[in-house]
Amino acid sequence: MRKRIVTLVVLFFLFFGLATCTNTPNPNPTSNTPTQQDGKFRVWWQQGFYPEEAEAIRKLVADWERKSGQKAELTLFSDKDIVRETENAIATGQTPDLMFNPAVDLTLIPRLAWDNKLADVSDVIEPIKSFYTPEGLATVNYKNKSQNKRSYYAVPIGLQSSHIHYWRPMLKEAGSDEKVPEGWDSFWKYWETAQDKLRAKGQKDIYGLGLPMSRAANDTFYIFGQFLEAYEVQLLDAQGQLQLDKPEVKQGITEALKKYTSFYQSKHVPPEAIDWNNADNNVTFLSRSTVMTINPSLSIPGSQRQDQQTYQTDMATIEWPNKPNDKPMTYLAGIKQIVIFENSVHKKEAKDLLAYLVQPENLAAFLKDSQGRFFPIMPKLLEDPFWANAKDPHISSAVRQYRFWRPYQQALNPAYTEVQAQNIWGSAILDVVKNGLSVEQATDKAIAKIKTIFSEWT
Image: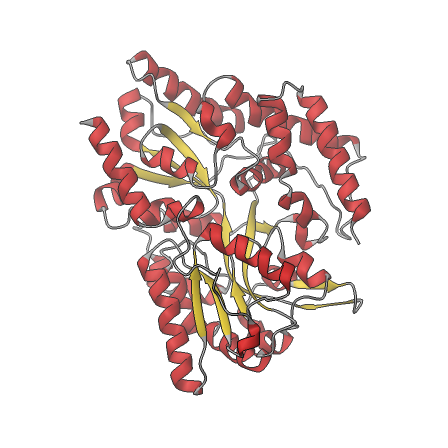
């Protein structure tokens, strides 16, 4: 019976599209996609994880077409395909006019702005500037090297941060008190103990923690970045300059890496985690093979929204524990952005559509249909009942969490984009858990790589 339940849960998960993070084929293959030379106004958009999300963007584009009298060719790509196709388009110079790719705000967009490959969208932002948080606007105020200026080269539409989920029935079966500790060390020990209790009851395939340990998963640097924050690691100063030579920074990196890798070394993380892609921690958790997991969005509970027993009762979402120094956690957030390419021959249409999409009422509709996968970056949108519903156990937790957030380091210096693109932190974790390096050696290696990246940034 357990195997049947696991299979049904995984299939349900895949149906809702989270497997697009791995091998789902592109529904609109671009091997035959026409280029800009045919004169069409092209919009590339990640297809999303839910049918409602894809339908929402289709409707918004169709409404804009009716109102404007213009035509747009909207192409929806899977998560994996849009990253590959974006890279190919940039390499060949055959980019779309407008693009929303939530996978590249931390790894590519700042570099494109630096290289003068994105259009300045200040005229789109100015009329709605008052709706945004200052942090959100600062994050898309990128430096353009060739023009030697800062300006708005993207329009923010939402936030994503790392959320902790766990299974209540598994804790009950383990005999654990569901009052999860708030202290740093006791919090992590709690999940290790839950695994040990379940193993003692004969459940040999259960793991307490579903944490990625791979270089292949962006989730790894998302989550490890939160560990660096926990240990008060300030990699860059306010001017975007590296601080890696400060003893306290190196010590913080070492402590964060030691803590993170200890879970794998103590066998409280699935051994396959060293090879995980972005969706694998989700699938493993939803198959109830891990007691808890961390995910950089609310996509896991969102995928279970139609199953009220699972969504409302069995699955829980909680805030992170306090830092090791007992200070409350500050949450790192990725700012999801829409961009227009500088080489677009349809900038006027692209800006007009973009201005329509980010009108508060239109953006609100899209974010709600994304089932909470993206959190509002316009505070006014939080007044909507969808976000203000205290009875929603997952949305309400996210609302509390997003009271204290800051952007990732690429907001201070676009060179850090390459650190994330190469997943330097994922490599450091692998060096410890797979390649036999000590924590100190892996720390030194990561620091050296980051210094090299910054020195080569041109």
